[in-house]
Amino acid sequence: MTDFYTSDKWRRKRKRILRRDGYMDQIEKRYGRMVEATIVHHIFPRDEYPEYAFSDWNLISVSLATHNRLHDRETNVLTVDGLDLMRRTARKQGMDITIQLPRCNGKTASQRR
Image (cartoon, rainbow, N blue to C red; front, side):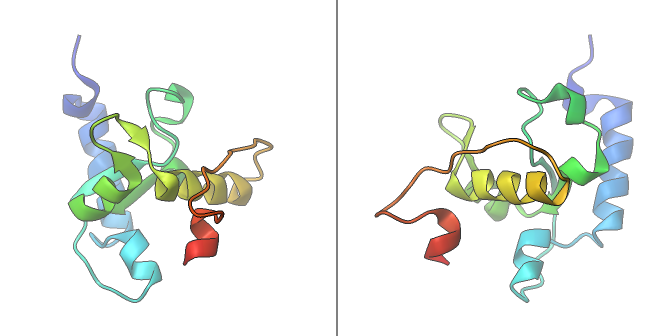
């Protein structure tokens, strides 16, 4: 069986998403910074939500630095910023799910900005 990230289907989808986003990090772009994107991030993690693996709304172009801020590379779980992006995306999609954000110093990720 082919690994997901080396499959032709993923390579085509990745290329389309990068092109859609103008090869720019969409998180950095929100703050007026133009940073090249090289990675397509699954907002709802592929392992936990395989039904969204190829959904355009669940994919976002980011740089390696941003991707590392969204995922804890040691535990492979979403960080507070990754969970916050997931919550905002769910709300935008009209999804009725609750995503509990961890608190840091009594504030959620969106309150720390």
